[in-house]
Length: 139
Image (cartoon, rainbow, N blue to C red):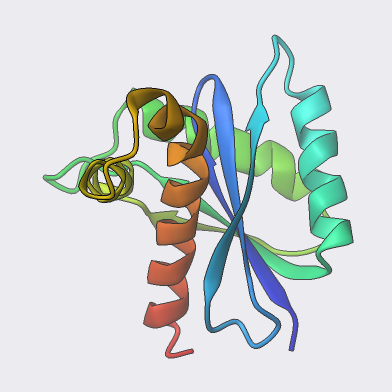
């Protein structure tokens, strides 16, 4: 079995998480900065996928609480399509409703400073997306 990578795609940054080799536990990896063009960040994601030997990429889609999709969900879906054309592994999307809020709540509970939260929230959100995906797959 091989690893699964999850992405929390935002306008400025992308949180990255990867599962263990049994696809049971999600672990935070890094936060990638997005530039004016997606070319460099797509290349960076491709490199992480290769380095981590992932067999699938899961991208969190920010679904609204009422189940509808908004502007940000459309942006993330477009990014997912670009990435899918570039990678040699499948790219799935996953409902990431409230994962960033949950990540922030966890960091506040852990008494992380605002500066510290800003540096890790995206990769923690990616970890929550991935763990939710893995749990739903029965892993």
